Image (cartoon, rainbow, N blue to C red; front, side):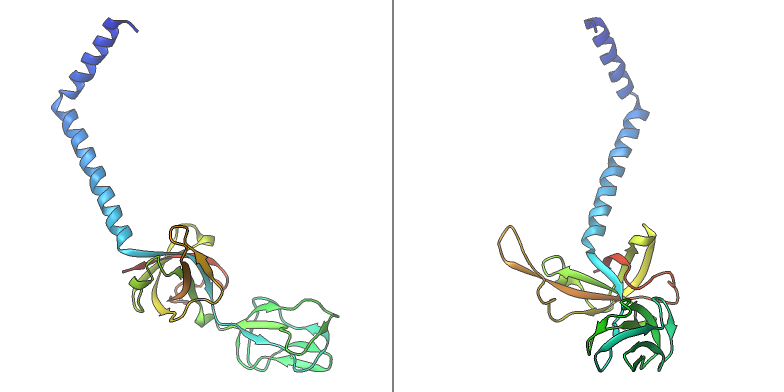
Length: 217
C-alpha cells in the first residue's frame, strides 16, 4: 500500500469518527458494555454457585433377615409400590416393603447367594426429592441459609431453570471429603446444602439427575 493510499484511508477513518452520529453510537455502545459488565458482576456477587449437585431422596433399603439364594425379584426400577409389597424371595424368605414408594434399585443376580443384610431393593418417597448440593466451605457457605431462594438447572434439560428454597444446610461436613487448597495447603471440607422444590410442578425431575444450583444471598 502506497503512502498516498495510507493517507487517504486515515483521512477516511478520521472523517467517519468526526461524524457526531458515529461518536455518539460508539459512546453509547461503550456505556452499554460497561453497564452490562457491572450488572453481571452484581448478579454474580449476589448468589452462591453450587456445581456438585444431584436430585435425590433418602433411600429405604430392603434386605433379607437370613442368608439364602436370590430366587426371584418381583419389581423393577421405577415401579411404584404399596406397603407390604413382596419385592424379592431369598431362599424361603419373602422380602417386603414396610411403606409405599418408588423402586430405584433392584439386585439382578438371580441364583446368587445373598447374605443376611444384603440390599435386594431400594425405594424412595418421590415427595421427598431434593436437590442435594456439596458446597466447599470457602465457596460461600457462610452466605447460605435456610429459606433463601435457589435457582437450579438439570443437565438433562439444558439451560431450563427451576426454582426452589434452601431447606437444609448441614452442620457438619461430609466425612472423608477432604480437599487441599493449593494456596495455603489447608483442608477444605464439603457441606451438604439441600434445596426443596415443588415436585408436583416439576414431574420431569427424577431421582439421580445431575444439577447445578445458584443460591440467592
